[in-house]
Image 1 (spheres, rainbow, N blue to C red):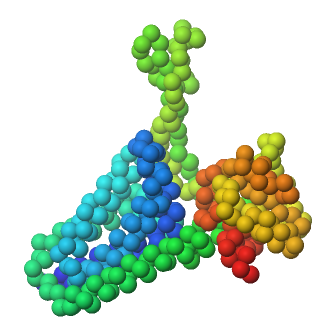
Image 2: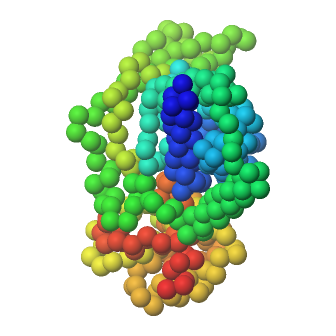
Image 3: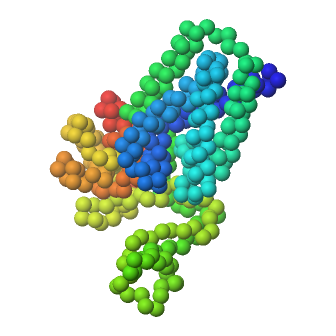
Length: 356
């Protein structure tokens, strides 16, 4: 029995540490996933706090995993892990049974899991933690309190420092489709054998205080302006096989609205894209742009913050991109992409570029 409990304890501890480390490598990725859940639930007021929630969640997972391995404090840690896994099981179960969330983000972008796999994993962990709790008195803690506190404090400081570094310097391991060396055009190609979801569009109208739902083939013969449009919903009739292009939304537009993506990819010389979803006035833009233009003839700013970009930049062209795309491409703002056609030759945060 002792060997079995030791196996469970190490399995649970290592899995929580592994899960936390992967997400701590990219806390903004977890933050964006939290925002997706809050958007679905209509709780957008939490969106401003998701980064802090992500940082705390990652730290809790890793510290709790370490605590269960060193068996200090053992019983309290098991209760914490039980609370965490119940919460995670709710999230993965919601993603699985609602169909509104495609991935739960349990292992970040490095190991994308389907909602079904994530839910099964969480249920197995839940059972393992319950078994450990039932047999909590059979596991003895030999580590002195002082050493236990020191290990947990060291772990907390280390995780906090690591997350601060990746927020400023980009993730240690880049698991995104915009990784250095990737060809964006190739990443936009649909994988072989991909089957898309079959979707039906339902539109909601109101007339004389009553609500009506129609699809494209079921509009009534008396349909006229008395039917007031309310909303539309996409209903999945038949799910595809989940194979999609890693990049699906890369488009860049000029200030006048012209799509310049293909023209940019056909540029015959290397060029620079500065990704910044929002224009932060605290960034030393003049110094950064001067250094870039000293080495490269073509430098562009890519942003979703059109108004502030127009006010800030007079000396370089401005390209407008979708905010979700920019968040995926660049975890730190601004980030420097040195491009050769559609291939990302170099990717770095502005902090590191200015240090070179």
